Length: 307
Image (cartoon, rainbow, N blue to C red):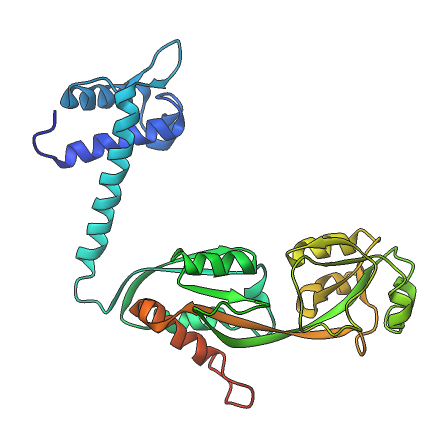
């Protein structure tokens, strides 16, 4: 049993976890870049130092013992703690250290008005050593993750307001109605009357869109989706009409796969917000990134932010 951890012990533990992740000694050769006999010797050395067997291996295959199962949890916790300590020790005295968890809805970064990359660039010029963790979820899920403390900043379209969260508009985009090549309205695209479009099947978002006026909201909705990628898939089938952001649809329009029905009449504006918890619940890291997001997305009429 370990009486004092050494660098050798840590190396042996990492070898064992690599074996577990690979599913056996033989498959772990590629990961560890050493031969099977060397890996077997290292595993046996670890078991000797522990005083118990971690796994069964041989012709019958690889399987963990009961103690091996328990040891995995302890080993992963140990290595995570070692890595965290290493990062903190290397960055003692730095202003911002830790992880920034950001959530956003799909394709937010590529919006023509979004300057999220610019905000990240600004943040990276600070005295910091921060790890970014970015995930993509639906608007409702982002709010839930914020409330649970799983993310610190959410960016996307939000159709209602949670009292305990703060919403700041950062940019907007226009959505236009589209049809795909092969749809009966494709040849008339550009001048299709809203009343005529209403006679056809539509794909619509599964959440409310207050920005869409009643005249814009179709009645004959036969498909719903919670993200623009899914709406695009439905529209591209040639059987549904649907609203998509202009920047998102542009490549398909260029390739002759999509066409706007009536850009002048069948469109609406969507505001995107940065959502956070109240100031008392925000870390210094989150506060700094919020400032950089605001600087990268100035209010209409203000000087353009630096790219």
